[in-house]
Amino acid sequence: MDAKAKTARLSILSNSCLIIMKLTVGLLSGSVSIISEAIHSSMDLAAAVIAFFSVRISSKPADNEHPYGHGKVENISGVIEALLIFVASAWIIYESVKKILNSSHIESLGVGFIVMFISAAINYMVSKQLYKVAKLEDSIALEADALHLKTDVYTSLGVGTGLLLIWITKLSYLDPVVAILVALFILRESFVLLKNAFAPLLDVKLSDSEMDIIRRALLSYNAVYCNYHELKTRKSGSTRYIDMHLVVPNNMSVKEAHGICDGIEDEINRSLRNSQVLIHVESCPNEIGCDSCVNAKQIQL
Image 1 (tube, rainbow, N blue to C red):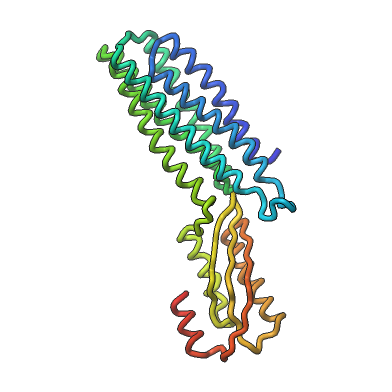
Image 2: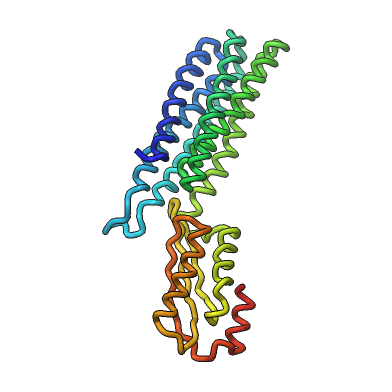
């Protein structure tokens, strides 16, 4: 089992334990904010399970049916996770409004407070590990899972603080109010996650910083080619696809042109891991110092 799958499994185990703990305390105390946190953790568990299977599928090599690999499975899982968060937020708000209209007493505030801060500590450690592996492996699925848990850290601290305030002020209505604030916070999370996961499914270009890296790689070889055009980029899972047309002098041999392309590809791959670069070579009808080529370089680079 690779690092991504092992890390996703760690998230599954931690979320399973937290759900049991939160749900038990929430039902015993009657606190809707603790129950909302149990629901949030249930969404985290679902996200962790989806992430676990998606990283295993996305790691499969390309085949006849999927010549570009299986990387976009991770993006699909990210979209599903975002929708799960949205549903959970709506349910929490609904239940909280009902709780405000039908106020009830909350028991075991001290236990609930302790459980929330234990949950925050556990999720902080697991999310930190998830972010670390997500960055190393460039995994949107693990990044989405880490974002779930990072949000859970803040919401658990918020609920714990709310229970502390209820204990001090004896105002039980603070419990559903805190739950609504938690729901609004994780609702915002769902939109951020949905945007990040959905963009690669539409073949959106690489980020501006990544495009700058590609242009710098081209700049390092601009003395030996005329210009380039049709630069297109996209991302699937952790793999970046970069296509371009490179115009070379008409007297350049195939071997020389191929060497330039190899150099550009190596330069890009040194800075952007998991990049697949496809360069179409074209012959320039003019000399390498012609005005049209020089102007094209200045505009593009």
